Structures are given as structure tokens and as C-alpha cells.
Length: 314
Image (tube, rainbow, N blue to C red; front, top):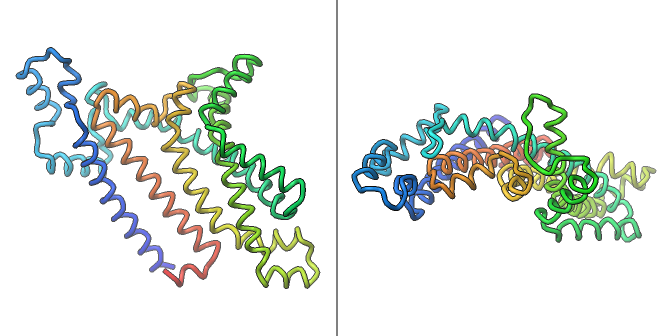
């Protein structure tokens, strides 16, 4: 197990270094100069040059990359060009919106998908199975931003059960969770549809295995065989999808955050791109990549826990 863990940690570090280099190069080659953007079209060349020097934009690219990388390792993400605020503070403020939203959406999608997938697999070919598959097909097809707007129309404007947008902060946790409920539902249902289909497919593959037929032959009911033997063996693809979904929910909620006016990381990246605030874009994207890689690392460890045979193969 220790060798397996060291291999995965080495892969994690290499992936982070490669990702940081790619992010820096991609952002640096983007057209436009942050100093010129901040000062406007009529700015004098000497003023632009002075601002570039103040922001460190006149330094060689390799020096800027190494400085940015070493700063992130020590927790210093630099200073925002636009807001003159430490990027780490901006990320921390926005993370307390995006992270709970992603966790709520993931928990909701998992709570929906697991029983729905089990139900459909246990009743393959029945009306219930077809109903679940039809609902998941609809969930995959409907764009989440349209679904989000329908939620606002029904539950915020017509019924007035929830607010149409904004975030009140965590001073009142119940009010904060209420503000995140509709965005979490809008994010969760399409993901629940995908996870349900994966869960059903994985279970159906397991149900055809010899050990499942042996379990049934020993007197176990179909439900007992699924719970005792089928579910654990079907978790590998399901864990993969859950890991990918959390990464998407954390990094890809920009449209939902725009619909509900949530001050999350996705909206921060969008604003930083429009304002050419390169240091914010680089730092937030790197943080999101770090989250994706760490989640995938955790999923790899979960593989080894669920199926110990995998530890000896890697």
C-alpha cells in the first residue's frame, strides 16, 4: 500500500507542475496588456510603462513564472491588478460560496442517483426501469442554466419560497443554505441523471457475473445479492464519475453562479478575464486544477479501498 501511495503522490506532484506551466503559458499568450486595459485607450506610454513596472509585468516570463509558483507554494498568490487586494483573500472569500455549493450539489445528486440506479437495475426491463431511464434522459438533455431559470421562475418569483439570487453570507447558516438550495438543485439534477445511468449500467454488468449467480443459487434474494455482493463491485465506475462530478461542480459552476448572482470562484474567474487581471485568472485556475487533481488522487485511493486487487496492479 505504501508503494502505491508513493506512486500516486509522485504522479500528483508532476501533474501539478505541468498544469502550472501550461496555465501560465496559456494566460500569458492571451492578447491584450493588463496595464493598458486598466489605464484606458488614452493613457500615455510612460504611464503604461510605469504601471507595468509596478505590477511586475516587465520582468522576464520565466522569472514571473518562478515567482508565481514559489508564492503559491507559500500561500502568497500575489496582488490583484484591478482590486489591489491579495488574491488569496479574494479566493478565500469566494471559496466559502463555491465549495459548499459543490458539496451540496454532489450530496444531492448522489442521494438521488444511488437509489434510482439500484431500483432500475433490480427491475431491468420493467415499467419502473423505463421510467427512471426516461427521466435520466430528460435530465441529461435539459441545459442546467435553463433549468436554473425555471427554478427561479417557479420557486422565487411565483411561490416566493426562495430568493432569486445573491448570497447573504454565513452569519446566518440557515439563510445561507437556503440561498444555495436552488443553485444546488440546478447543478445536481443533471449530474444525478448521469450518475444514475452509470450506476445502473455498472450493476447490470455485475449481475451477469458468476459470483452473483452463485449468491442467488445459495438462497439470497435479488435485493440481498445486490446489497451484499453487487454494490461494492459496481462502485469503481461510480466513484470515477463522482470524482469527475465534484471537479465539475467546483470549477464549472460559472453559468449557475451568473444566473443566481453568487460571488463564487466561477464568477471571479469570469470577472478577472474581462478585466485582464492575469494574476487572479492564473491563481484561481491553478487552484481549481489542484482541486481536480487532489480529488482524482482521493478517488484512486478509494479504488484501492473498494477493490484491494488494484493495489497490486499499480
